[in-house]
View 1 (cartoon, one colour):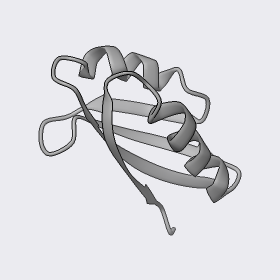
View 2 (cartoon, helix red, strand yellow; view 1 turned 45 degrees about the vertical axis):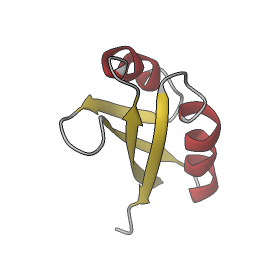
View 3 (cartoon, rainbow, N blue to C red; view 1 turned 60 degrees about the vertical axis):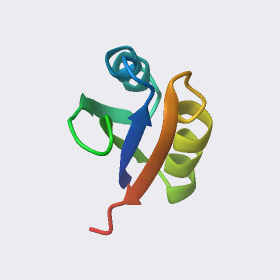
Length: 76
């Protein structure tokens, strides 16, 4: 199983609504609204690296209000 953490930057005032939408995405384990450079931290997992990257690029990035994402694949 491949795990990844995704940092998502959102439009102003969209974080709470996007948190719920992101949590509903298949493969997402958790999503938390945070303070800092990014607005939501997401933990996702999939069978392969491609699965996780595909989830981020097609499911999360396409949500209205997501401005930017950074994906970090766990190496352990």
